[in-house]
Image: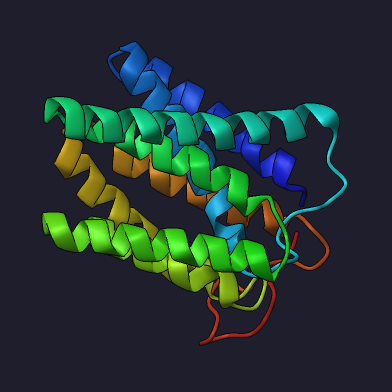
Length: 212
């Protein structure tokens, strides 16, 4: 299934979450970003993750997310060094927006860049002693080199992603982040189950593709 479709599903989940939980603009942005990123994250595996035949609107959206993430990251760095202020919510939105842009790029260079970002996240998690952040970085660094629709397209990956979301929720104290991340990630697998190739939900225990 096309990356633009997964992105649209994730964004819809984020909007629904923003409407369900107590509304603030900051939380709404967080829900939409977490759900959208989670819906795309399973396709971090390999170079054939997303279709190259995307329309202009989806391409523009991904470029905006990439550069928006870069600008937000710059703002986070400035606030930290200039004013000794660190905003975890803003940082989460910046990193995930930035990575969405890279997820949609194909090739070894893209994989290497994503892995480098993952390594940097692991370092940040080590520095701040945040296990969930180190786990997030490890997932980002490891996934690009896996076979497509392999380990990242399993129930085990959903559990791992939910654990990361649980850690983020406890860190920023925003209700629903874990649930939003799990639903977003699971939506990717459900959507791919509706394609002819299907998904090996229980790989490597079972290599049978489940498809509808």
